[in-house]
Image (cartoon, rainbow, N blue to C red; front, side, top):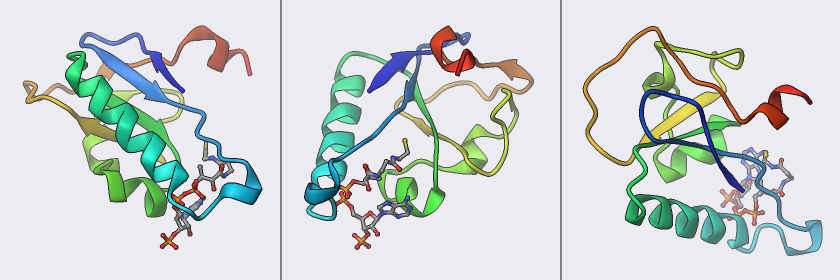
Amino acid sequence: MFSRMTAPFRALGLSPVSVAPEYQRRGVGAALIKAGLALAKEQGWDVVFVLGDPAYYERFGFRAELAQGFISPFAGPHLLALFLKELPRTTNVQIDYAPAFAAL
Ligand SMILES: CC(C)(COP(=O)(O)OP(=O)(O)OC[C@H]1O[C@@H](n2cnc3c(N)ncnc32)[C@H](O)[C@@H]1OP(=O)(O)O)[C@@H](O)C(=O)NCCC(=O)NCCS
């Protein structure tokens, strides 16, 4: 699922990603993520954030260093970003997941 984030640019949060156990490790997760990112780019979104394991998400281009400098309760080594467009470098900018995530 991709949901709109609150940020001073057009940002999406990728979460959750889930494949039924009996269908895992067959490329389903990668196919879903790649198709979602392609659609997000086509629709003009600027950035996609994900909170997850870099070992998995780096293969799609997500990087922890690209998420540094953003203010989030999830800031740290597992908050990753993928820029779909060139954006001016910003620091100390607040990014927030949709309220339903904060309520968890
Ligand atoms: C993560 C998940 C969506 C991947 O889906 P998938 O269809 O199995 O993924 P793919 O077949 O495209 O890719 C499999 C690769 O991902 C790796 N992988 C899967 N989960 C991983 C994880 N948590 N950390 C690192 N690597 C992971 C596998 O080791 C495998 O690597 P390989 O290609 O080098 O063998 C699936 O394992 C899942 O639903 N997990 C439970 C929910 C979850 O943890 N979601 C992520 C956080 S929201």
